[in-house]
Image 1: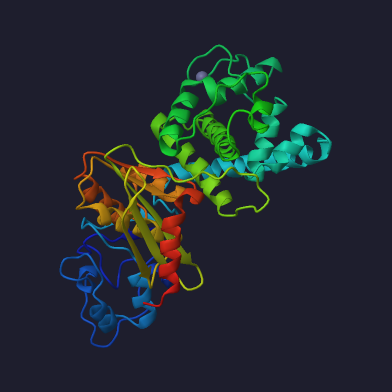
Image 2: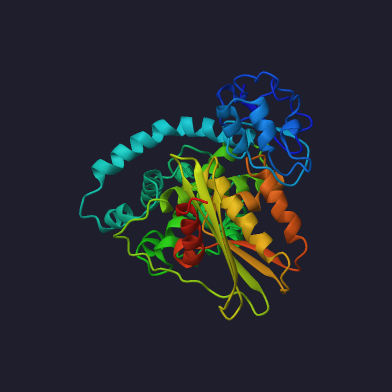
Length: 423
Ligand SMILES: [Zn+2]
């Protein structure tokens, strides 16, 4: 239960016996068509294994199953493998550890949320600022707890005589205050470094005494940066609890990856609901370094029709236009697959162009996160990530970056155009 085959070359997965179709009931075909001869999943692919063989699908499967199979992305051939179907990333252990922790903390949080709502006076300026932040409510409440020193850090517990020592269990520092845990600790530093590499957001220099307000009032960073930082603080704390609650087997690197991942997911969940009244400073497209090319990609996705489109635009360092492409995806299972397809189209577009390096920009935080963690990916886009990796290996420099959707307008226009055309 819960395991599903991810398809690579399709040779080791059985069509009728194995669970391998994410969007089908029981993850298997409902029935075999009379005269169907397929045994292994590779029998439903084109000879090079890079695409589904439409005729073989029609010959073996009923239309509903065939449609579900066509939504499984194929690409660079590799072995089929097992993944955890409940998880987007297909990785079981870290997430499940998190869920357990989340359940344990849910009660505490519920209590805190009620208390926060009742005790915070409506004209408390800090609470007002916090309330306006476009972050999940649990992150707001968390920051409110930080502001009032309600976080059960070891130093806090020690001060209340609930813990014999106030030292940091991660790095051995003398007092694990919330400030230490969230910004100074070796673990926190590694987290902020990684987040900077992923998103370009840098933790500003914070004053221990005034940091809560400084971050909120916008004097240190933009609103978007501030929101990412607040989500980052929250995920550092969650991950710190994970380690403290006896799950020491989680390596530092994995914990940091997890925290970064959660932070990016929190942000992408929020950024999908743009607020018209938000006072976000709109970033604009920036040119690549001299001699390099920049590819902007974007995807459109319709949840109702399970269809979408990709768009990609290539520009030089002086901003001049090189190439563009747009493609309709008649059948696609998720927004993440559509974004990944857009990135694959984008890199194919530049594969033969002379350039000192390539920067690929997408506004999908989920894709950037998947790309950064591609070594340990078991997600539905593994084959696409590998295709991108293969093409990228030919460039002397290649980087995937997240970009605000306002700085990704041209690619967006391409994708929307393609999705409105019935090609
Ligand atoms: Zn520490």
